Length: 144
Image (cartoon, rainbow, N blue to C red):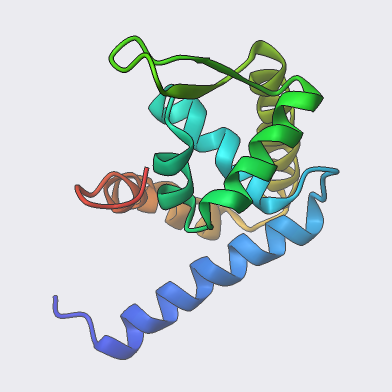
């Protein structure tokens, strides 16, 4: 079954709309850059500030400021880089993991509530799409 370019564009726009809707519905005291940086640290492990800045697409001075704020809040910490004594790495702390877990749980609960009011056919369509969504976000070369 051939999918039209316009249909793929519609899917892309709908997924983007879902992300923006979810962000607005589940506000947090944390900035988007704070959350994505913590997510990156949780998924990738300790990183140098320069690597973290590159992954998050912000300047190195901007990332240094963000890491300072994360450190002050107890969500991240600097540790020695055992491969290079001159460098430090940034890693997420237990408190950082807890704040992320709470945020993810809040968003999941919000989504569950919305899913429960959908008709069974819509819910079944979303369940059927889960394997494709998993492959979409785990495609090699996609950001971590």
